[in-house]
Amino acid sequence: MNIEPEYQETLDYLYKFIDYSLVRNLRYSPEKFDLGRMYDFVNIIGNPERSYPILHVAGTKGKGSVAALCASALEAAGYQVGLYTSPHLTDFAERMRINGQPIPHQDLVAIVEDTKTKIESIPELTTFEITTALAFHYFRMQGVDAAVFEVGLGGRLDPTNVAIPTVSVITSISYDHTQILGETLAQIASEKAGIIKPSVPVVVAPQKDEAFTMIERAAEQEKAPLVRVGRDYLFSPLSHSLENQTLLVWSASEQALLDAYIESGGVQEWEPTRLTIPLLGYHQVENAATAYAALRTARDQGLQVSEEEIRRGFRTASWPGRFEIIQRHPPVIIDSAHNRDSALKLRLALDDYFPGHPVVMIFGASEDKDIHGMFSELLPRVSRVVATRSIHPRAVDPEKLVEMAHQFGCPAVVTESVEAALEEALRLAEKEAVVLVAGSIFVAAGIRDAWYERLQILGNRS
Image (cartoon, rainbow, N blue to C red; front, side):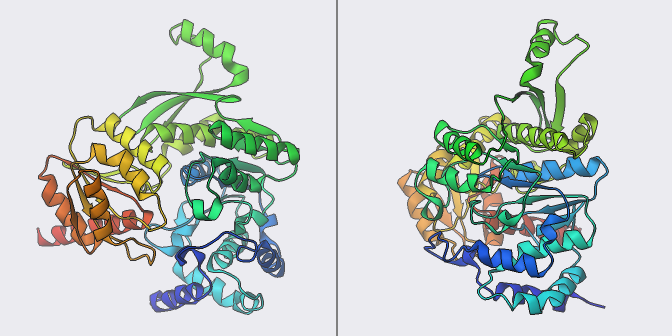
């Protein structure tokens, strides 16, 4: 039986509800982002979010990587692990995974069909609220032992925030969705810190002081133990290649042992935990240390995962579309950097892995993003921009991107589709320049799909 027509009908049904991710000029407010609807919905489906321990991950950047690393380590420990992330790269089903496998299309069709009456009994439910509740429900149906939930937007009013987790995690906070979450880091951090629950430990990645102050204040108010990466857990990069990178991580209580280890030239019996991850760029070292601290904290809460299981899980973790090198010669890199801070981290990764290489950048973005800020970080490193747009309704016109690139003195060309952008960038690269994709996860996903379709076509011709 071909389930695909029914699967598409199911997606059409889900998307007919309010989808604020598609709305321009949206303001973040309790009238629109009302957790009351979400509490009502999970209540009538039996509060599935209470059925298993949850690691709840918020932040501006890095939360998907941290979630993926945690889920992979828990899977390596023998758990059946649910992972909920958004948005998806290729297929909506990627948002709900168990041990890395997306929900089968027939299961999504069935679970939506079975809950339609309940969905329609709650007025003004949003697409994301429904999807989140269905993920809670699906994971319970499948008997997961633990789950990792990535926050969609903000934290305080995000639908995932109905869960009482085992551990809360807040990754790097920077400026993004400022028209929704606030114009200052303190305001944004306050929204992210809304996931902190009474007495539930919270693990915090390295933050700017302005952001950390708000998180620390929220933790104190909720009497939530606070674990700070860079203070309670420390880390250091060790080596990197185009395949992976290695870091050392240790707890503050192990600092004296670490000092002796360094002084001995690494021949002491004790040594810090050595982690190898396939995710590239220094920012992923920070994310790995944060995920490690989250897992160690979860262990203290009773979720058993050994050092070896963490190492094994991290080695096999997958999070595509983040400094993903899909071809070596010429290098083709897909990244979904979409704010100024992530653009800076992307430029630093370029300098680290491809120093001195010219760069042809395929770029598309949503109109509410800080394009000027991203260009300020990236264009000094770029020889030419290939402007494009995804099919997302908030995508900015490529012509406007060209005008902005010219203001930075960078040559740019317009393409009307991601497929055309890929072909133009490969032509301009002439087997010498790095082809880089940035600006939007939707453009990253489109180029990634176009790349593999292109390979299939070329393979069929040969």
